[in-house]
Length: 241
Image 1 (cartoon, rainbow, N blue to C red):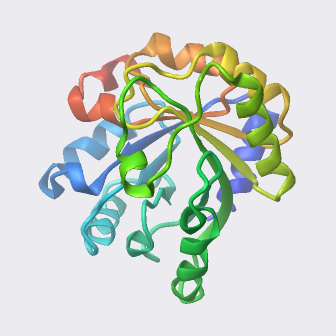
Image 2 (image 1 turned 180 degrees about the horizontal axis):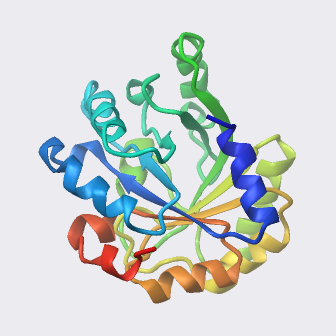
């Protein structure tokens, strides 16, 4: 498989928008994999992300193995912890929680992960991860013991994203959190995107095709949708190829 990161950049150069379906092993029944992934294959989705805030140690690998049986789409780990690393996937977002100040999630967990990553052939993609408040407490806040960034302080969000790029991140992941009440505003997305020279991922609270297109129009290069598909698989009907 070609470099996933290179392919993302190539798509952006060609003005193609990308969509990742996020599957949380902690909320997903393995026996539903075939049906769910077939829906993904029929949709405009370009990537499958796998991961969650709190997942049983072997659940991620079991799910990735099962997904691989039913699709040729790239599978990218979106890990909430070191225990979710598996070489059965194609790549991993090496996430640094830039919006928080918990050293474990800025660099500590990464050091812990290296011994595992050395034993894999995963493509490791350095990613600056920024959590913005959405109207409710998210699992990310609880697990990482950090607070999201206030959404009204766009300048600080912009500066944080740019700092991530200057520190060497290859992607910035701007997130409102799983099941967000309020998705990121178009103003937040557009202002962050204008200040970056690297791809921008946007996720959290996107529940319909209109939300998706608003995120794209504002500047998101890759949008991630998870909860909306968990709650209503008919959403796939709106996103058929």
